[in-house]
Picture 1 (cartoon, rainbow, N blue to C red):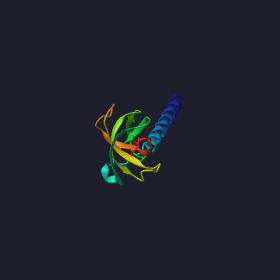
Picture 2 (picture 1 turned 90 degrees about the vertical axis):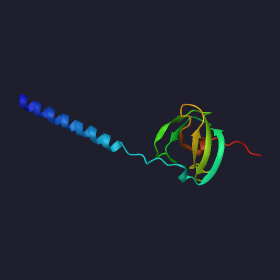
Picture 3 (picture 1 turned 90 degrees about the horizontal axis):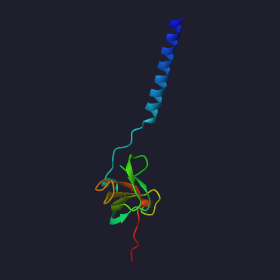
Picture 4 (picture 1 turned 180 degrees about the vertical axis):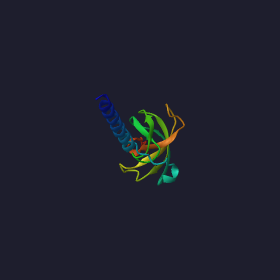
Length: 119
């Protein structure tokens, strides 16, 4: 009886481990590699800031890895844009000028980058 209980425990443990390993393997998807200015479609070259707390990414889209967050008011140099400037699917390549990510380069959804009024 003891051998049967031990065998059942071994099988149950192996089954549990395979389920956990399977879940881990299926949920860990690789993010695409980082993308730089070569992805840009429009040059901007503007010092500005972000208008809300926003994710800072390695490429122009939500499929890219978020490397952190920029707090509302973080100063950025907006180098260029991917996508139509007025589009909700547009992304800006920025260099962070203040805060925790100062001097890092990454992508922010365009709708969260302040556009100063121009006369």
